[in-house]
Image (tube, rainbow, N blue to C red):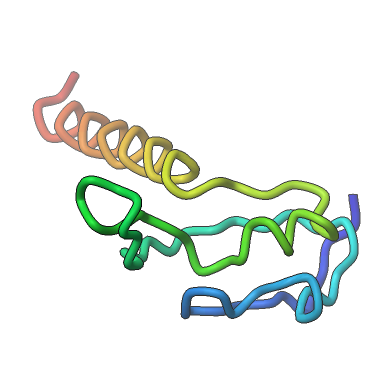
Amino acid sequence: MKLTSDPDVHGMFGTLSEERHKHQGAAVINVGANAVSDTSRKSGYRLVGDVDFAQASKVAGFITPVPGGVGPMSVAMLLRITLDGAKRVTGQ
């Protein structure tokens, strides 16, 4: 695995696509959560990330989905850190 000192950082839906992805085979961690209009859904919208998943998956080695990607892991790690902090405070 090659580490890069030149990462892509984007912050808007659809800003990372096959054409803009400059590191062939790189891991793409999609942390964005955007509601876009979708009349086929009962809610009228669907959740998408900042990455155009269909396009970026053509060049990315690994890619996290939205929803269901980093969200659950982020919550788990925040709970773990909170628990560790509580244990330190109480001397456990």
